[in-house]
Length: 256
Length: 255
Image (cartoon, rainbow over all chains, first blue to last red; front, side, top):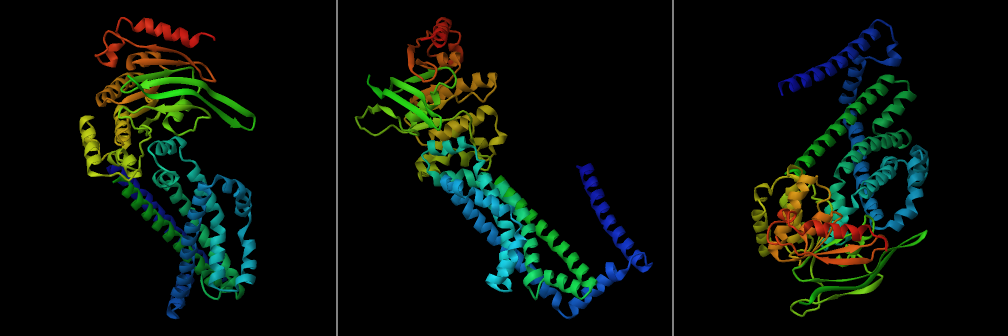
């Protein structure tokens, strides 16, 4: 136990050290002119940029918009794919008919769809959320459905021998048995939704981190670009951590 | 005594793109109330198909099953089915697992739950009711699976090689244990097994099936002089070996 905790602490401190080393190296090489801080920025310039964004209150606006769009896309992806996978599970015929379509839609590069969304839906939140959904949705449906299908058929027989209907089989066996797959797919989905939202903001936004990145690169304010990317890193980490917490919570609830 | 169930000329085929495979063909036999019947046959001969038909999970293609309830009513006896593995759900506690059938049938009445609790106590599982299935031993899991089946108060128990997932030693203990428990409830039981010794020691009658498509080759009533003793002791009965040889010859002989 003690050894375990020691090891844990060692790993954590190593991680922080690497981060600090990287920051210092970055700052020093910018100061000494090893790299051109106009192109590569530096920690002090990033700090300055954040302060500037804070002072005109636009930081929270941009971060908030991106967060909102990502979370909404993610929730919609979860709901739609859960419903679709359930339908596919109920009807074998439907799943057989739709399988090639799902595979094609899943392997299609979704960024190719974004210009279409702009034409159809205009530039705005709807388009961006559509972009976020489209990136994650089809893979998510396939994963959920595959998870449902992996359920042991004998466990389903058990439900039928106890007098259950297909509904009982789904609620008592298929759904609770698929919780691990639902969670692992969710972990992938939140990242994909963020990718989709940023692509959408590149093309069709006046607000959001994706917009800041594209705007910054067009006017050669690379400090702005790098600052936005760093904030994106933080957001991705935050998402991952929150899903981790939810996962932990669900596992604990199942255990009791 | 009248037969509780009377199977007459039951036939069933599986259909695939390559044509149909006859799984069972013209099977007829009866089962008396309170009787323990073992069905043996070569593997893949359609024993499980037959059991699924008796359980009502499959519709026979030909033949009929007649019911003669002791009270004269015509309804199909309530069937309890035990599968090869216990299939207790890891995401439910032992208690939640054993009341699964009641939950599905929306019969979580006080009376039923009391019965379940009594069974849990009788089978020494009450202490473990809040544990996860993975924390139980193989034998305890089988007992929990039996309680899950008995909770619905079935008249007819169907056991499809219920002990085959256990190692030999546990299997001897558990099969004896489970069958004594079922004897005590005075229910009718049909058990499928490929273990002749198990069939002889547990049942009142052994039905031997032929290879696919399955037909009834012969029925052997088992009368051991040690009948009241436990199924484990039954293996030492003087008649045990001659029954074993007889069944073995029936199983291996060509038609």
